[in-house]
Image (tube, rainbow, N blue to C red; front, side, top):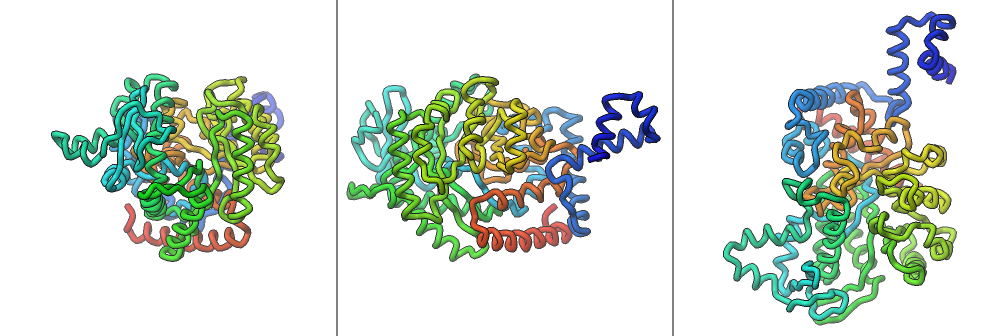
Length: 506
C-alpha cells in the first residue's frame, strides 16, 4: 500500500519525486507499469515453470497477431466487428489455443439461442411435421402444431419440407431459412444501422424458434446438441437462462412447465454419465421484464414451485429482454420481494449506453436486491460507487463481449468497458449470451475478444487462467461440487499445458 501511495505521489506531484525519492525516471516509470499489472485481473496469479513456458509461446502468437493488425487494419480482428472478423479468427493460432483450452464454466447463456443455427437448419428443420407461418409484421413462426393463438399468424401454415422440396434450390432454401434465426450479415453497419433495428430482429428470432423447440422430440435433440457443443469447446459446466414453456408432442398432448425441467434434468444426467468430466448444467428461471406486475408475481410463484421440486437444479431467477424498452427493476420490487430468502437473483442490469437513465440505474437496484451476479453490467464503469460495491462484495459481472457488439453497444471491442473492469480487478466471468443467433458456437470466440481486445497487449496466461478459474468460483456449484470441479479443472489444465509444450496445439 505504501508503494502504491508513493507511485500516486510521483504522478501527481513531480516536485515530490525530486525532493522525496531517489527513484530515477526509468525506475519510476517501470514501477507504475508494474503496479498497474499487479492491480489488474490475473496480476497476482502465480504461474508454474511449465505455465510460464506456455505463456511465452502463447505471447509470441498473440503479439504477432496484434502486430499484424497494427500494420494492417484489414487484418486487425481485435478491432473489427465479429461478422467481419470471424474468418480471421477462425484461422488464428490464438483462437486455436483458446478452443483447446479448458474454459471452466459458462454462467450466462440463453437456451433458445445457445445452439448453432447451422445445426438447427440441418437437423430440426428436417424433422417431419415442422410448419412455418407468417405474422402480420412478416415474421416467421416455426412450430409442430397448428392454429396456436400465441403464434399470431395471418398466413396459412406450410410444411417446411414442402417448401424446401418445391424450391428451385434446396441448398439456397436452407441458407434463407438460417437467416430467420441468425443475425449474421457481411454488412452489419447497413443491415443493422441502429440499436432498435437489431434488437427488433433479435427478439423476433426468439419468437420464431421458441414453439418449435418445445416440441418434445426437438426439445430433447436441441438440448443434447447444446451439451455437445459446450463439451466439445472444453466447457465443463453451464448455468442456462431458460424461459420455460409447456412441452407438446405429435399427438397434440401438452405437458406442464415442470416437465420441461424434468426432461432437461434427465438429459443432463444421461450426458454426465457418458462424459464423467462434464459437471452438467443448472437452470436460472428467466422471465420477460416487460410483463406487468401481476404476471411477474405469477412467474415468481412458478419459480417457488419449481425450486421446491428441483432445489439443486433450478438455482435462480432473472428478468430478461431489452432493458432500454423493458420495465426497470424498481417497478418490479413488489413481485421480487415475494421471492423466498433462499432464492438467488442473477439480474441483467446496465446493458445500455445510457447514463443516468432507468436502464443503468438498474445496476443500483440489482445490488440493493443482493444479486448473486450481474448480467452484462455494460454501464457499471460509469458508476464508481456501484463498481466499488460489486468489487468489495465480490459480485461477479457476466461479460458477454460479442453480444454487446452485435447488439449495438460497442463497435471496436477495444473500447468495451470490460477492459476497465479487468484493469481494476472487478470480478468478471466470460460468457456468450446467445451465440447461435450470430454464427458463433460455445465460448471460444468470446474468450478471443477478452484476451485480444479487452486485455492489454502484455496479458497472457495469467489472465486466462484467472478468468477460467473465476468461472467455477462464481458459479452456484455447492462447496462439494466446486471442490470436484477444481480438481477436474486443475487436471485438465495441467494436461493442456503438457499438450502445448509437446507441440500439439500451435
